[in-house]
Picture 1: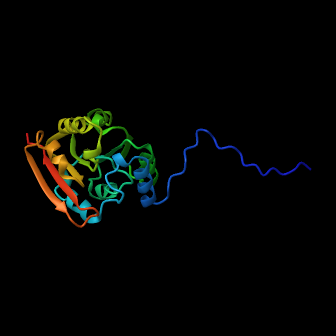
Picture 2: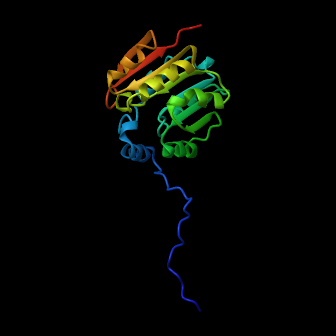
Length: 208
């Protein structure tokens, strides 16, 4: 009788590493791997989410775009509000976050895309739309490489339909300097019931 081997078979080189099972574990992993692209080590609070999304005209929303969805802290709230025929487009540069979203959120309205927010016009067009109704971003604009924030802001202004808005939450107020040259109407608030407190901006696209 041949000896029983105790050697485990080698893993396939194409196998992807397992992701953390909890959103907190996944969020922390993403922060450690690329802290410059994750705004905070702590996911946004429910109060921040409700306040940030409150001005959205959901009944007239066909395409809602989010930059940097991470572990889906906003994703579920967006899908809860989005009409049945709407599309939620989540764009992230981190492939782990995109894999996590695809594995944990089973909703045909969600499109999780690995890519850059600066390419939002192309990504929106590839999904059959000319414009987005709303764009949400929690990207840490103050820590992005030089020129990237401006490229994202320009592309965002171009892709939002008249009467839509760019929704931004940040932990530093510097993003106002990025928004002001591009949007004349900007509403601002601070959500103190968040760790850390967050600056909320609604940059309103002029109506046609």
